[in-house]
Structure formats: structure tokens, C-alpha cells
Length: 268
Image 1: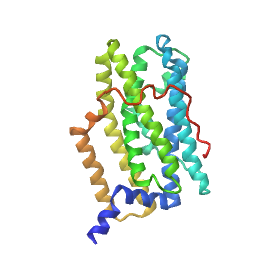
Image 2: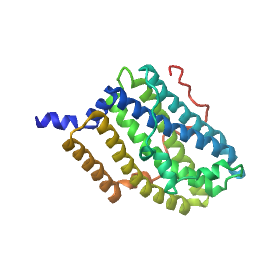
Image 3: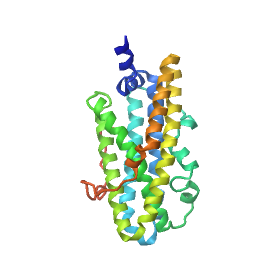
Image 4: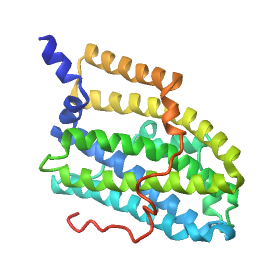
């Protein structure tokens, strides 16, 4: 009995429950698609407004946005394959919006204005992206481990995972270049501030998502309590030391990872 309970509470077991139920799968894909689409819009606006002295970054930022848009289309396509429609995204699960409300990244009001961004704005964007792309890359690595061979999700997961690895590599490479150009203190300060807020937002969003999934899947209270404790425990670890993995910079193996056009997803 204990073995069955332990298996049920593993990441793989929980995600299996979510994808096996149409209602929870639609919510999962809708949340993911919304976040990716927001990221696509943000990158497109940043590319259009990039600081005059940093225009060499424009193609890479454009590529980043195109990848995010593609991911949003992939999640919507996964729903269509099941005959499902996107569902409204609960505000408490909107990771991108909650980060913006906490002052992380570039404010949408600024991106809606047709005014060039400053070099500092671009550094803030890259530092914020380095933190959030670490989270995305970690999540996709986990999904590839557990569901990389899944007949319905495997191809999509591998494609998105490869893109997220490219995005993370791009952030490392560009931030290191800017640090060598004299922006090191701003980069490190912004990385630290972004990481400490991100782990709080990720905790809150994780609790909200598990709450919504628990109601859909009718998880018993003891199971929900264990999951809540696990999320809070992970936050405690990240607050104490785990956030450091999100602020370090090293030259990536994938150089110029966003140096070409976005990879299409014809199957989706």
C-alpha cells in the first residue's frame, strides 16, 4: 500500500493523472499555451524596440519570440488532437503576469509604447530570461525523462525541450558578453533579484495549479496535503540554496544557439 501511495505522488504519476483526464489536460495545455504566447508577444515587442546600440541582438530576440509562439501553437494542437478547446486560464496560475506584477522583467506598459528600449532594459530582459528559461529547461528535461517516448506527447516535448535549451544557452552567452563589456554588477544584481522573486511566484503558481487539478481530479485531502507540503518544501530548499543555480553564468556548449531562423513544427 505504501509503495502504491509513493508511486501515486511521484512527478510522473501526477502528470500521468493530469494527461489521462481531458479536463485537467485541457487546463494544463491552456496554461502552457497562454504563457508561451505571452512570451512570444514580449520578445516580438522587445525585438521591435531594442536599444539602438544593441541591434545585433534583434534577430536572436525575434527567433526567441518565434519559438515561444510555436510552443503555444503546439500546446493548442495537442488539445485539438483530442477534440478539446482551450479553457480560461485562472489568474492565480498565470506565471508571466504574476512575475510582471512583482516587477520582474520589462513592464508590458513599456513594451506597448513605441519608444526605444535602453541598454539597461535589454540587460534586464536577458537576466530575467536567464532565470525563467532555467525553470522552463528544468521542467522540460523532467518531462522528457518521464514522457519522452509517450505516443501523444513525446515529439512535442522533445521539440520544446530542445528550444528551451537553446534559449538558456543564448542567455548565458549574451550575458557573459555584456558582463565583459562592463555590465557585470547590473547583471548579477538583476539575476539575484529575479531569482528570489521567481521562486516565490513559482511556488504560488504551483500551489494554485495543484489546487485546480486537485478539484478536477478529486484528490483526497491527505494527498493534496502531501503535495502542498512538497511544494512548500521545495520552495524552502530553493530559498535557502537552490536559487543559486539560476544566477550562475558559464559559456554554453551551444554557441550562437539562436543564430538562425526558428525551427518549424510541421507536425503540429
